[in-house]
Image 1 (cartoon, rainbow, N blue to C red):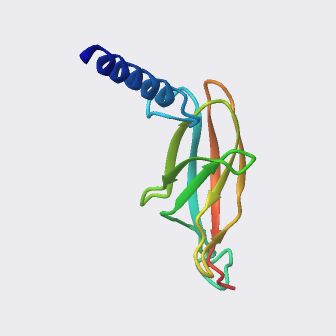
Image 2 (image 1 turned 45 degrees about the horizontal axis):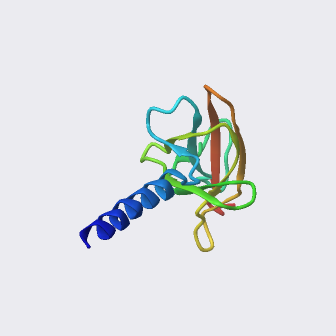
Image 3 (image 1 turned 180 degrees about the vertical axis):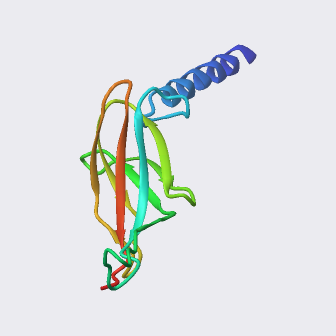
Length: 131
């Protein structure tokens, strides 16, 4: 009688391992050969800018959803205090969907193509609403 229980346990482990191996995530680990590396900026910082009084955009820490063109989630990343982020991905087409504030800061989606063996540079710009 013990033998059927052992067979069921072995089959259960095999099925679970197979389902785990079939994950759909395109996100790769930190040693990936390709992906996206970017900078998140927040601006404008001043209502009036001039050559004598420049007011550059500043680095911004934000959450960014990485999605397929169909809107399926791939991963979620956060830029650092310096506004920089890096994520390894399989080659393909992706959409960066930055988490906007309510009502500001706000950012538009960014389309990105990842090619084999290359990290694609991207800038994500958040609008402060300052005018």
